[in-house]
Image (cartoon, rainbow, N blue to C red):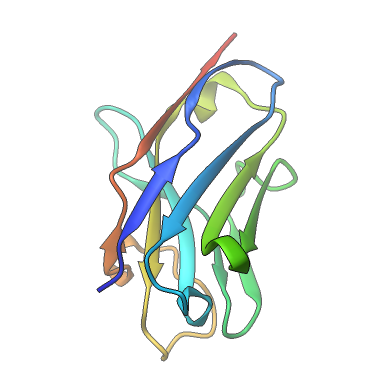
Length: 127
């Protein structure tokens, strides 16, 4: 069973950078697709960025292309969301998720394809 714990959220100003961490219990997490989703009150949870580490393929939401990057540190068993040029519309609860399916070569953008989720970390961007 995979356990995920997010951290690194906080209050920042527009234009600032912030890095979120997702610590995974599985030492072999690189076999999975790992993704970040975000959600604001009253809205559905949406895909932000993901990486299928079996194939090396990535997917980014149009709203974050060029600003957000997904990275990993195998030694620390951790996945990161590197965010820059933050905007007030980036304010949300950010969730880390894992898809253990071996049938997909790209990271899925559908939350129903992810079996394991963290509890979320709040990111607030002031203008």
